[in-house]
Image (cartoon, rainbow, N blue to C red):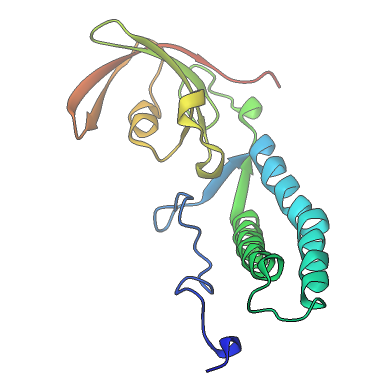
Length: 184
């Protein structure tokens, strides 16, 4: 059978990116302006730079003849599918994104989306996190998604409050030490 009619993998046409977080059903895709700009910049780079470069490599490789043993052609086609999948994902995510400017938050003593929160645990360990959108979360850098368990426990709390964080490891109390927002 001709390879042109056989799918290489079961996920070739799947638009879902396996390593990106999904949004819970029925919630908006909140994102900061910086996060939106970063996703848009990635989309523009893929569409205007990376995809055309890969297309030219695949075109060149295809002109070399036998495609079944042509590594440049096979890798290029695979990379092209990955790029197209990421472009579809980013286009969809940006279309449904709702940009929130944390600097415009009127209740600056309460935890909402975009807040940078310092809290301590019962054993005295202090942690500072910034609550951001699902697509811009970097937990190791202190940027947590607003749908994460820690952020959900912190939301709507004030400085001085103690909130209860329920996790698989058990229940833990967090004392809110400070809440800050970017300057307007």
